[in-house]
Length: 338
Image (cartoon, rainbow, N blue to C red; front, side, top):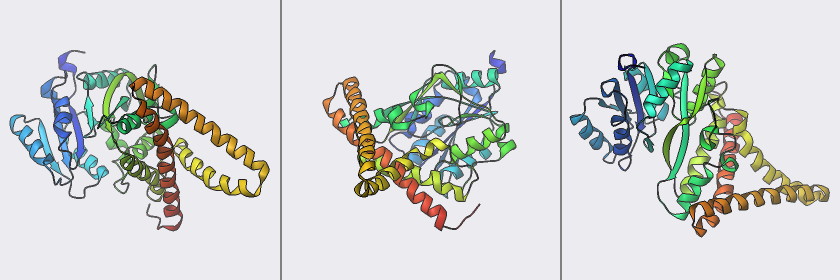
């Protein structure tokens, strides 16, 4: 593909209070190997109260490719839609402020999108800790583990280009938004999952490529892990009040796990035959957690990672599942607002 054939791209970064990460994120796009005159970076800021806006404004003074847009509603899907409507690119990229891209990220995405005709392409997410503590490292490991995130291929990796139901952030053809609309602004979380499922239902093609890689800096405390995944679990179910198909069935596994813990423990008290099955399955889960935690500790060469991972796995699964349970109750007893 010659330089004359490269399309213009727009990078949209929703942000709020990201002074520690925003400069590195923006500059990873500005300094990539894609033709510089064909890149624009739009930071959609949720009225940050730290130095995020100052940092972005400072960058824009020396680089006219950078634009700051206000998101007064401070909700991620609103930021994403504002970015799309402001952008001028033929392809739309999204990025989290906690992400950092390789220099060939844009060029690879564009090449694969054009060659395959895919509506959305993306790569494998390499998860790194924001803080290199034992807990931070353990959390980053479990978020890349099949025991931790199940069938999320963009986290665990693929060996060849694979059609999937979602990719992290994504590189979209602009025409996708003309065809199926914008992100659902009623969804506080998981708006990308719902959008990609809507795209798939409309006949769109989403492809994950193993040679595309991005780095995401994960949360690094147990409290942050619980809070984030509780919210994700809540919205994956509560979103049914606002969208027809907001999730895939694999997102229900943590809810099934929590229900198993709750009702299994009760039934095992009154039915001794079930008690053996319940505790056997629980033992299998715990053995798997121990084995995976041991592997993470050996890979990190830190013994403390073993103990942190043993706590992190159940915390990840239970927080997501409890969030989904509360989301289900919200959906059943709350007002339906589709």
